[in-house]
Length: 429
Image (cartoon, rainbow, N blue to C red; front, side, top):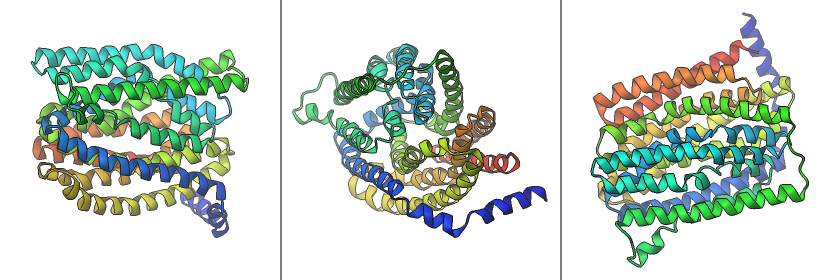
């Protein structure tokens, strides 16, 4: 009864006046609008790039790129990828030199991720699949300066420089078109997919290096104070915890794609990847919300922060449900128009994967709340439970329904993630 009364009191405190005040926050809508515009442009560019790839590359080779992409989140953990979250957390508090410490450590740890890609490339060379072997080898070679410098957007967001983040997202998407240049002149080495992929990696590496160096120079010019020894140690410690949590999260949210790439044909992986691309584009809205709201939320007093998360959690979940329905309808309309007929099977997975994003939104809100508190224990509980469910459900369902079963496994794991998160939020003040 006490818990029910407590929840009732919190809901009563979320008044109409509070909601109206939030709606009148011009800065919130300006920053959100800018990032939504960037997401819209990136999505439009994706609507050009992805169909072009499906028409210009054989379906088997497109499925090979999807295989490398499926393995990326797992091997990324070896480079201590959680440091990006830790750097973002400290930078959002005004300790911007955390970006420099994080980047330096990530570059060092990226060696292990590269070795992971090299090892898998040897496996595929032994299996006489030289194209897939080269794709993993190329990824490992460029990894330190492509994915290893992935903390840049978080830094721009923490500084609340959303105009610069806007252009970063646009340029990042434009760089993905670089691979089409040699294909347009029929100038490729080995195969079209190897030339396409390696060109994209070279251009992306150049962009990341320039942006990272530019941020570093701006911090030096502004005479940004360095972190104390205690803060630096805490940053690394928190980054390791975030890496562990991210690892569990990757198992929960990405194991289905790896199982499809391992157990089914590359052509099926190509279809599944189309559904994943649409779902990931939809999920960009979540990243926009976090980019805009995390810095002010982490600075808020705890008692007000909890109430605000209840209000925003309800609004965000409802918004994602509405947008998800719209994205699903658009996907069913656009895919048959833009993609070759051989990719129409991707529509089978589309609704399930979009639904998994929607059903996992409440759990994501709760997880962000505990991240602002640096409460790793609750995050571990949510992620470990849902990861176990994801492994068991995806593996069991894929044996029954093939790739569709893998999508159902993702949906079920996200459902458990949200239900557990809501339960823990309600019983823990």
